[in-house]
Amino acid sequence: MASTACIPPVPAPQDSVGLRERARGALLGLAVGDALGAPAENMKPSQIRARWGRITGYVADRPAGTDDTEYAIFSGLLLARYGSALTPVHVETAWHEWIADREEGPFRGAGFSERGTLENLRRGLAAPISAQHRHAWSDGLAMRAAPHGVFAAGRPAEAARLAAIDGSVSHEGEGIYGGQAVAAGVAAAMAGAPPVAVVASALAVVPDDSWTARSLRRAMTAAHRGERAVRSAVVVGGYPWTDLAPEAVALAFGAYAAADGDFTDAVLTAVNMGRDADTTAAVAGALAGATRGVHAIPADWSAAIGPARGSCLPTMAGHHVLEVADLLIHGTPPGDTDGASPPPRAPRGAEHGPHAAERVRRGPERVTAGTGAATHSAPCDTGLPPREPTPPGTRRPHRDTPPPPAEVGT
Image (cartoon, rainbow, N blue to C red):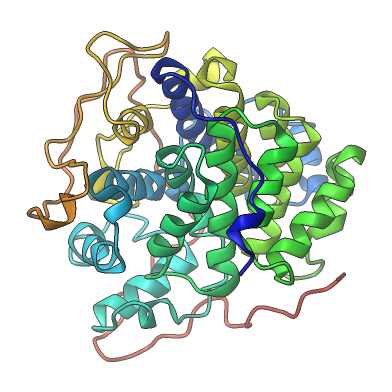
C-alpha cells in the first residue's frame, strides 16, 4: 500500500455553504453521469458515433441512473449512519438487511460483482470470503465510492480507508484499489484541490505497482491529447467485459483530467469513450461535481434526476442523491438549498457520531423527495436478462466465465 504520508496536502474544507455545494455537486454529478452514460454502456466509440454522432446530452427518452446511483445511495446512507465508526460488520449486516434478505427489484441486484456477493452472502459466507467471486476486481466499489470522499472532505486517506471497509464485503485487490482512488480523489476535490492534486491524491492511496496505479498514470500521460488517446492508453483491447476497475477508473480520471475539471466536458468525454460508460461518466461526474460544485451541472441535466425508484435495490426507493449529500455533511438548515432543488427529508434511521455503531440498526425508510425534483427515475438496466434463483448450497457459473486477463500494455 502506498504510504499515506505521500498524500499531497489539500486545502482545508470551505465553509458549510461551499462544502454543501460541492457535496451536492459530487453526488448529483454521479447520478447525471450515470444517466448520460447508460445508453452507451458496453459500446465502442464507433458504435456511439454510428448511432448518435457525438453524444452531447441525454439520448434516452426518460434519462435516469442505473445500479451505480442506487448503490451510491446505499453506501451513502450507511456511511451517514456510522461515519468513521463504520466496520465490515456494519457493511455486511446492511447488505443482508437492505439487499440480500429482501425481495429483489426487477433487475435483481445489478452487476456481476453484486450478483457474486449476494450469492455468497445467501450461502452464509461472511466478509471477506463473500468477496471471493469472479468479479472481485470490478468497478462495483468505484461506482459507489464517491460518498466516502464527500464525508471525508479534505481527508483522502480517511476516504480511502472507509472505501476499503465498504468494499471488504464485495471486492478484493484491484477492485478495492479502484474504489479507494475514487474516494480519495473526491475527498481532495471536496476541499477545493485542483485537478492535478485530485489525481495525485488518488494515486497516493493505491500501491505504486498496482494495475490501478499504472492505468491511472498512463491515463494522465495521455490526457492532454484527448479522449481517444486516453482510451487507447488504458483499455484492454479484445476483452469483452467492461467492468475492469483499473480500466474504468483510469478512463474516468482521464476524462476528468482531459477536461481540467470542467463538468460538462469531463462527463461527455467519459460517455463518448464507451466501455462501462455509465460508471466512467458517474465517476467523472462525481469528481468534476465536487471540483466545480452543483451549479456547474447544466440545469436540464439536473432536472432529469429524481428519487431512486428502487429497480435494483427496492430499499433505496424514494431516496434522492441530494438528500444523501446533505446527510453526509451533517444536515441542511431548513430552507437552505444553495440554489438547487429543495432537499428531500432525511430518513429517520440515519444516525451520526462516534457512538452510532452501538445504536439499533434499522433499514432505510422511504423518503418523499422535495417538490423541485423530477420523479421519473428509470430502472437500473444492467443490459442483462433476469437470472433464475440459485439453489441453496450450489454455485452457478457466471455468464462471464473467463477470469480477468493479465494486464496488457504495461
